[in-house]
Length: 557
Image 1 (tube, rainbow, N blue to C red):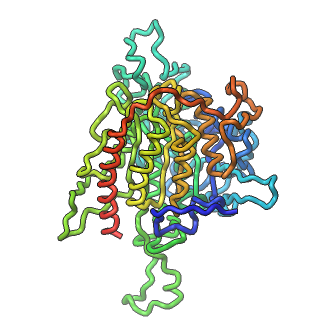
Image 2 (cartoon, helix red, strand yellow):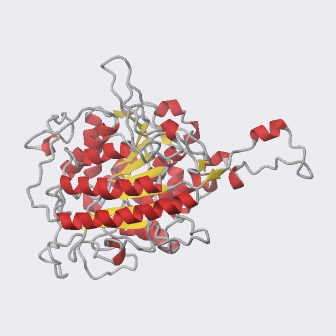
Image 3 (spheres, rainbow, N blue to C red):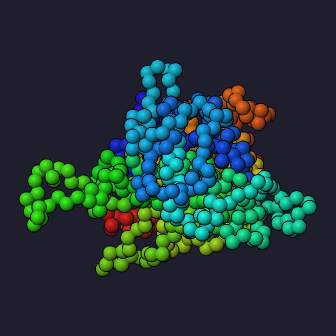
């Protein structure tokens, strides 16, 4: 059965593999090694196994024929200084919440597309599942990390070692600490820096840090590569989404910006064929100017045979990528990385072509206040309708935004931008620290169920015809609710009926879902401080910016 959806922002490309159909191919990035190192993250000890364990126990995953290595990065084949090697590699784990998988060495270009296609059989006992794919370790090498991060910073991370177990950086300092405690309302804490790369306090070194940054980077880049190679329509990386990491600095519990690395890979590998409706063109088939780099002309550029012409590769264009961040905290690391230095005047000149748009548009929806991390800066505030940077966008929210606020913002601000930008790919960061009761987010009031809730937002994105999506995790410090929310989103992508009344299956972490032992994330009861006047102002601004983006895109189409 196919679910028919419509969305008037349908891009003209890639429509044959729409992510809105019930036959969408969903890939789930997981390996035991990835789970183990993600469990070591000091701010979220044990969260990874809890989330993956719940999702697996609900029968949402397909572990058959899982490859250990999802592909090879040709530029890194001889990279003997790869980050995985420097961090002592990684053996196969035998225990954990998802020990059903059997790892295999298999290149991503050998992963048959049908292996990732999940369909519903006529038999009612067969339900759709997400295909488990292990991170491609070649995408987490030192060379890959250096595609964005500073060399000295990467080398510092890779040689990091400690035998000590760091304190949980989300908790207040101990009473014996000589460092004055910061306001209990500020998370992550602001303290005097003692390390040039900010590897202290909120971002302490831990024993598996070198392996952690390699696998997190590899996971999100693997997810993006699967989209670029048209082997999946949606990819899920719940251990990714580290949006605070800067080029040469850790921040907000984030050490490596997997999101930036993943989107950079999309810009390289996810080029779109001009005028095509068949999806992206795999980078391996491209050369300069969209061909394979081989001359197709005779000695004098004449007498090109029919057979030679038939082999000519199609012309391509760079992809348009939309980064949508719904974590409660501002996506400072990602937004800074893709902030275009190009200035876009308003109105555009009529006598000359406007500047070309960038590859990546960033849009962060977040809580903003002077006592909330990261501290407000001009890029994190509501832009002017005349901003010269219409591709670096923010929607700051007051405390306790509810489903109603998210619905208003999504329909009035986010969808108009998507319609104007016409993205080929969306990278959706779904941190859960905006849910009620999060011990770090504190000012969140977003629900999972209902109109305007997290599941509703994901369903709305599914209606964006012809768009391939990578969804990641992020913040989320009440682990049982993070697991519930991400399991609920996974079920939405598989058209599986789960709601708040669905019982938690018995598994290793069952007791941590007391007292309800259901999928319900309790609703918040704080008053939404976002006023109609503020939301109307945001919609007014974004209506103008959407029109500006549409004009720029159309004039370069």
